[in-house]
Amino acid sequence: MFAAATTFRKAWPSFSLYRPHPPRAVLAQWLEEARALTRRCFSLLEAQQLEVPCLPIVNPPRWELGHVAWFQELWVHRRGGASEMRDAPSLLPHADKLYDSSRIAHDTRWQLDLPDMAATWAYLDAVHARTLELLGGPLDDEAAYFVQLAIFHQDMHNEAFCYMWRTLGYPEVLSQPDGRNPSSSQDVEVPAGRFALGSRKESGFVFDNEKWAHEIELPAYAIAPRAVTNGEYVKFVEDRGPAPRHWKKGAALDPAQPVLHVSWHDAQAYCRWAGRRLPSEAEWERASKAKILEESLVWEWTESRFAPYPGFSADPYVDYSQPWFADDHRVLRGGSFATPQRLRRPAFRNFYPPHRADVLCGFRTCARREQ
Image 1: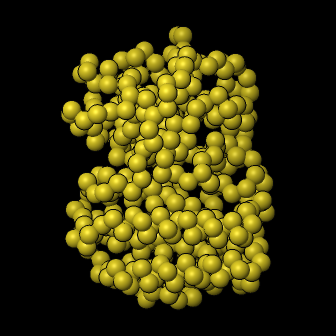
Image 2: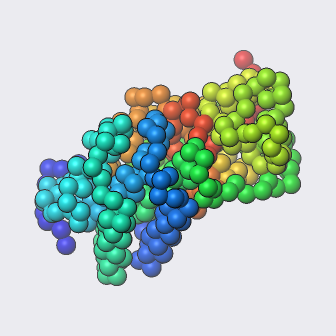
Image 3: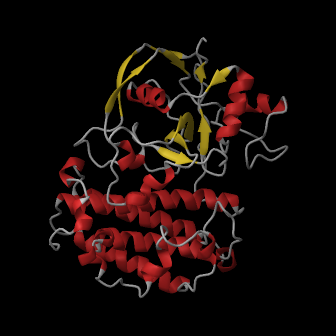
């Protein structure tokens, strides 16, 4: 189906490592779901709301929409820059010069001569139709890998649209679910022992920063079964702690909801106030795999800095993880109410700079270790 391997391709892993992949009908359903949510996000906006200020935590919506289309076309239909595929023209002229996030600086995205919204949607729809056509026939391991990569990439951007709209004061795309009846907040004790951190080979699609599962020794610890709630966090705020982003004075809060829009720094401040600490990502993952954590529907900060696992090697989309290891990013685990279930895996590692509070993030705590 595709041309012979090049030097570019020789660095790629064996795609058999990412089996089993979902049936074609499931992939087509996921693709349609991702597209429907993208459509919903933009259906809520007036034309003038597409013009946004240049802020470090947002992108121009029209640029980001085109980027979603370009990414899917590049990886699924042009194999991400392999020379024999990159020479194939894009469905949209000059798309590589407009939407390559690895080469187009953030602030430059406001200065580009972008296609209008009608042309941008036409590009997205054309790429989407081409991918659906691909899913109508047999898929080898490589094609299945790249289709999943494109779907998950669109899922992540859909979530980014959700919190970007909040940042800009636009209509809500999805709302945080009502809190459950408060369950026991008593810590769950986890005994010391060896634990395999990360994803195993042939466990389905994984991202390169999850590779591969490796044994580590974990001391005993005690972790909260649920995330910190609004009702708990408000006591910290009343004692002069920083309020989460988007809290409005006098507005009603659901005390049972997990607190949302808290930076890593503010989560650490809460822990100091409460005499607690954040879990490491290994502690979080072990507890999640042991099924002792209640699902919080917020991304949960851990104390861990984002770093490669032993023997790390980048996957074809080299810039997914590797550029961020050297920066000060912290690991989040779990998933938010805007994260599709297909991405909510115990070993999945999200990562953001510790000052970010605009994302759909909260946290849970552990008992402090004895010194």
